[in-house]
Length: 113
Image (cartoon, rainbow, N blue to C red; front, side):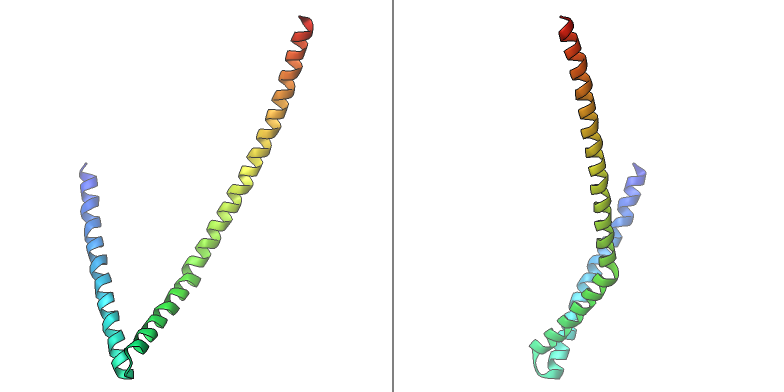
């Protein structure tokens, strides 16, 4: 029970830190947007520039980090599908053989009656 309490105590500061970091980034992003908007004389243009920066950043993260992961997941799914097909074929073969054996045994028993 002590191990669980220590784990909870160690995880809680991480989430608090992450929350404060997220709030700080949101405020800094808002300030940057307002500042760029004032420099250009158009608040909407400041928002478009900062939003465009984050869009490019998200695209880079996707291409570098997420895309290979998504491709690996696709390969795992393909392998699982292939294994499932093999299992399905084996099941069908075993079922047919068992059915043929049972049919032969039962028909032989019925002939003797």
